[in-house]
Length: 153
Image (tube, rainbow, N blue to C red):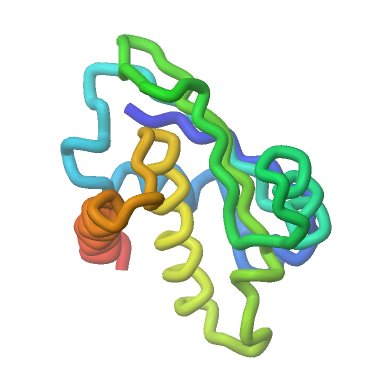
């Protein structure tokens, strides 16, 4: 079972995502069996933020002085999922997802699901530094997204 704690420091999120906690819990429930961790207690936190905050974090932790769509901070380099495991933190920028500003809510949510899945896989130590790793991560992202969309739409 996955437990997600959702926090927000950007007001814009409220206009696109009314029940943030419920939204992310539903997404996790729609994951393929492999990522549900049914007999374990896996938890993570999400901060729904903005470009200003994420730029500062990106500079401090990755030495990149620019905003980005998502940052993931796994708790360890080799997350072994035990009976009870906190896998890390994800920060998502509202400004990145809300382009164009007049996009349909469904498109915004699909982009949010995709980027959340990307961040989630980073917490499980997937990366995309090498081409082979990029292909492997992309394949998993697509598989999870397909599962989620088929169950929540």
